[in-house]
Length: 218
Image 1: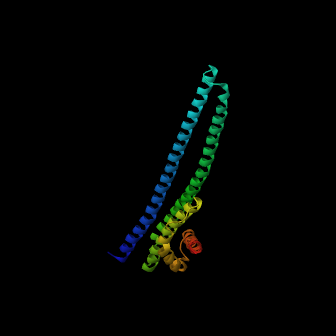
Image 2: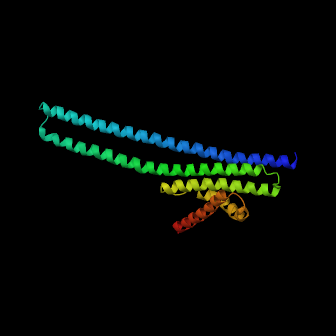
Image 3: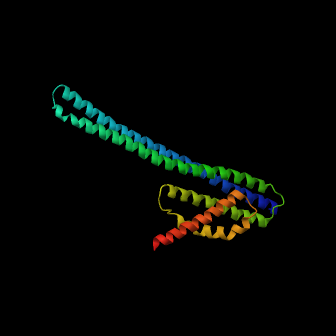
């Protein structure tokens, strides 16, 4: 295999990494929205079942009261049931709105990253067509794409946990990635600007979270 053929083979491998990462983002995004749709449907169905039961009890009380089977003094129960029903309806809608807002905020992060990856993938295809690229430059691209994909993964998880006000449980698993990205970052100066900015954001975000974890452990 000639040097040029070997480089083309490596270019193809790197491009597959970008494409696979983008497709995984698409799949995760679809699963994320599907899970929310299922939860939303189950919540609405459960709420409607409860409200239907309350409505049935109200109608039963009214019917019994109309034929003097129960004392009309017990009709206050209807007012209580109406209040309970309205409370369930309002609280359920508020919960759906708040959780739905978080879900769509995460979905927006997915969308931004997918669109960005399409741009980076196009840029990389342009790089692969450059006949003057050297082995050293290709090796740098390998590090660059690896750090970029890992940066996206970390930032997506970080956004998810922050939106849902949870702890970034996978933070420690990215320590080696952060260390490598920090060491290589200066050499990425002339490469794709949007991907480079994403790596920079990853480095800063990781360091901020690392500091927060140290403070919280004291």
